[in-house]
Image (cartoon, rainbow, N blue to C red):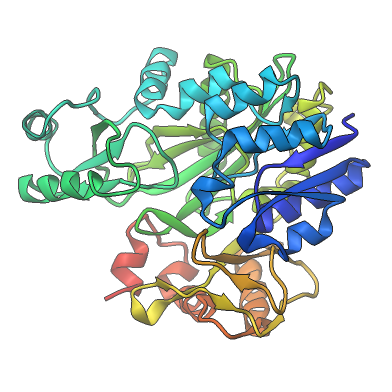
Length: 443
């Protein structure tokens, strides 16, 4: 096992990794920018190294500086968390070429699945079901022609990038032209793009996979992530209320098939769309820990972050597919520093008072406390509230109780918006799809 590990991240995921390392007896090294000098993850780590100015591009996205910090700190391994450099193949390569272990899949795998077009090609070869789509498009005219051939509506997707950045649906030529214009002005400007047939009333289903370095691959069931705003997940649950046991087995087998086809190792997520007729369509593979990993932990009692580290250290998986038992229903609400009344405008500022919920079957993953500052430079996530129940209905009740206990002052949050979702009659009976938020919750 590793003696010391550097966490190339911040916020709640850095705190989560620190906790896993403490339980494994591993020393931790935090990195921090100017803005994060007093952040919670810095105080909880055994050591901390300053890596630059507040802007992410000059600190948490500065691969060379982070690798230098890792070597200075004499660590054995680097954990990238999620976001920032977690899906950067060049960063993974720099870590391993420095003689350190990258906690995640190989740089080659990250590069292969990180490029959505290359991933589509690999999955088609592996026999996974796909929505109709194109190769990367070279011009607006080519995109317009391709859309006509596929048939509207279509989904515009950048080849690179994660978290739904740059993606948008188009119902006609005018909307497609506008979508491409917006893409070229977004954070993924300059990235090649392609089109896929848009699947109406789809649900977003993703499968957690785990693979060791010896060819042993299993899945840990699915998560439903259909509650989204601007292609960004807001609320997730596991298992999905839409799947029958047969569908669950099928999508799990598809995920393992996808992972095997690219010789995947460590933790990852295979994402699918589920149409109204019960058909699955491959979307992408995320080669990292997911924000919503905790709900899988809650229903399987398997610690995914510890598993990541153990696999990276060369340990074999000790569980078989038949050992994975789904024992409950879990829900996660992402609490962000945003103002729902102002089109979810980010609301950075100082948290004057903070009291998070607790009690039976409630877990809160957070990187803040009273006095913490939500900075404008980074993601607005404050905390993830995760609950477990014997049934979906029980989990909803527990989440409602948990959110009623949340107390924060000094900033605007999305707590009340989540309460509205949980009270929505359609949500309560599981009648949801990826357009639920825009159709049901936002006028």
